[in-house]
Image 1 (cartoon, helix red, strand yellow):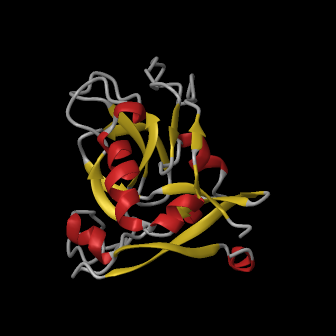
Image 2 (tube, rainbow, N blue to C red; image 1 turned 90 degrees about the vertical axis):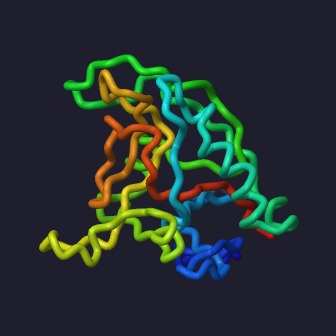
Image 3 (cartoon, rainbow, N blue to C red; image 1 turned 90 degrees about the horizontal axis):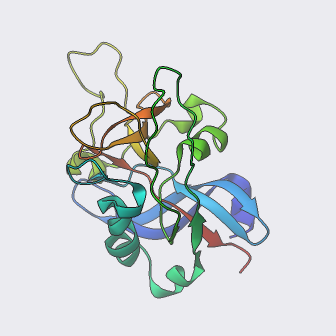
Length: 214
């Protein structure tokens, strides 16, 4: 696996990929390497999920998405040997996320967590990708079948865009909303720290730390 890190993409685990639900290998983009471990994020949006249920106290800590990633997804995507290679990640919340001055609002980011599988934060999405273009993400055919939306093939939009919006784990700051806002990356690759409602269904791009020196 160490040699394959030079390409920037590795294959690890398996998940439904086609519209028919055929299970294929998952491609992961290497974001950072530290010693014998690497931080990776899925090359494609793998599924379509809500971040959380309708409510005003949803954070990554208590989200439906965190529960799903570390239970159903973890069990379905990786065999026992692969799960042993996944390293527990200590995820520290950003106490005072930096947003546009317009959103001068204090938000509850929740508490620090330890997870096998997670999604990136606003800070990570901004610092681990070099540009909006690098953050662009296509959904798999399976994820599109599950509900991930793109503008590809839309007869009403002249500029077709095959990319999708995907969740980040940072709390958003949309004021006076009907439920908790959560940050995302838009379908043009821009980071949207202000967020969308947590009960929207968007693309899921899992991330994890794995041992690569074996």
